Length: 105
Image 1 (cartoon, helix red, strand yellow):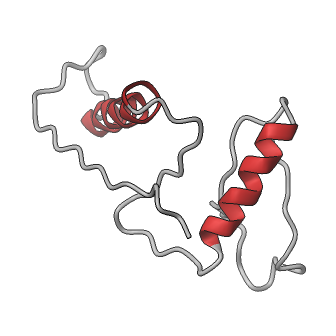
Image 2: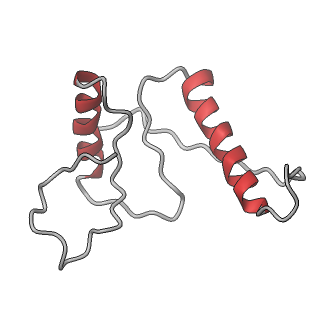
């Protein structure tokens, strides 16, 4: 159903130069990694849409259908910037409607 799914891997152990002493090195490594990944996707591959997953995530059976529906919303609503399936509040006692979609700031 989704023939254009591609896998990319970025391994970079080069030294990190912090701007301020005491800052977390991980902040710079994560920022560098996302900069690389987003550059590969939107500049090198010149794609219009991308779904970005971490390597340790398990997705629901309807995940890609959810993302495809989200892409349609992005196409139609210029005030939307992104679609995410991340939900800090997806706990049983907080979820009333499993089919609800929310807009956040």
